[in-house]
Image 1 (spheres, protein in one colour):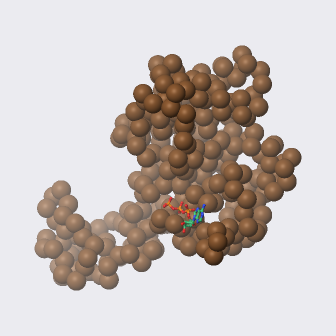
Image 2: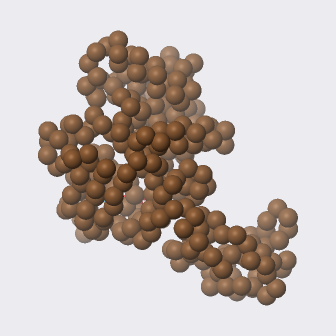
Image 3: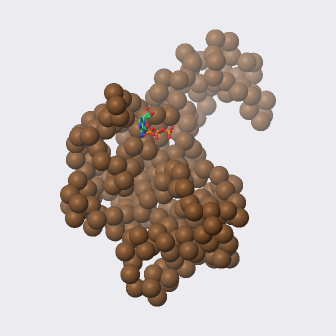
Length: 279
Ligand SMILES: Nc1ncnc2c1ncn2[C@@H]1O[C@H](COP(=O)(O)OP(=O)(O)OP(=O)(O)O)[C@@H](O)[C@H]1O
């Protein structure tokens, strides 16, 4: 169990996190929010790579503010940062092995077995000897996930993990993460509402460093109940509409003339919550 209480991070004069309270248990929680909402800042505080300005984190009874407990916590978490900054001349195997060494996995044979296991988990066994600079963007993203899986962490922190993945890889990724979420805590930040709908049993929406929503994807979608419409003509007075594959216009907001109600999705709920739907 992870308990985040009154967490604040101030950069200069800017409050990236503003008294955030959040409890995380087993399962996959999606973190949505506009650019600058504080998602990466929250993940970095949890991953112990950034010290908060105020508030506390209690992760499995460990306090990351204490140097000894911080080290113990680092052994129990896996972190896929937004911009991993890999060494381009390392091979995929050596890169993951290097992270394993940093995680103080000192038994060489066991460490190498774990490196092979995580590379297989993300389907990169055939690329183990390939240099990072020769991997495609999607492969690099899977490599970033592989290093986060080392040592079977209790807490997996994933910052925009599906960026650069093609649809097939994204599907494989979802399968992998939902399996991981059965027995551990996964917190994943994303701009992909489809990933949240497909993968997360819980979703938290951050805005201006605060949680403005905490519930299921279905509950988030329900924020747009009675606000999603399909009409034969382009709706007047609405800025948010598009033509669907069957030639009708889908809009979010007040009902256009002779429009039919449509079922809201997570994205509709998210946009309604943030007040971006045109009235
Ligand atoms: N190192 C830093 N120095 C100063 N300000 C920062 C720093 N890192 C983040 N910020 C600011 O803190 C706020 C929150 O940033 P953060 O990266 O956590 O948001 P985010 O929700 O992850 O955004 P995005 O979706 O764009 O990744 C933003 O206003 C950002 O400009």
